[in-house]
Length: 126
Image 1 (tube, rainbow, N blue to C red):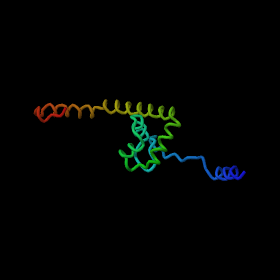
Image 2: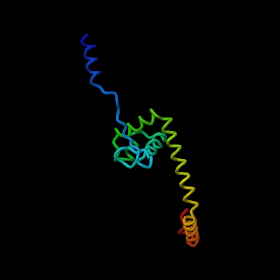
Image 3: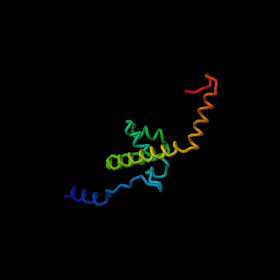
Image 4: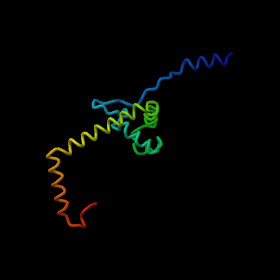
């Protein structure tokens, strides 16, 4: 009987809610709280088979708690996060197309190509 009573007491003191270490900024980007690092970056690293510890090596400003929390959120809401990531990729591609079609950007690129062609062959980078 005392084991059940102890179990009941312990279970009453444990809260089963978890604070997600993520926030969505005004432009819609989901970032790790207290950093400028987007969820996209952690998900990419995780999907490249990086461990939380390896991710922290790349982003030492992030705590393991934040990394594990963000990854837990991703795994719990994988379909929604994947949709968010697809939407972000579409937005980035659209922005790239719009920028690359601007006359000033086109002229700037052409001037860079011209200047690069004028360099001696030994100083050109691939």
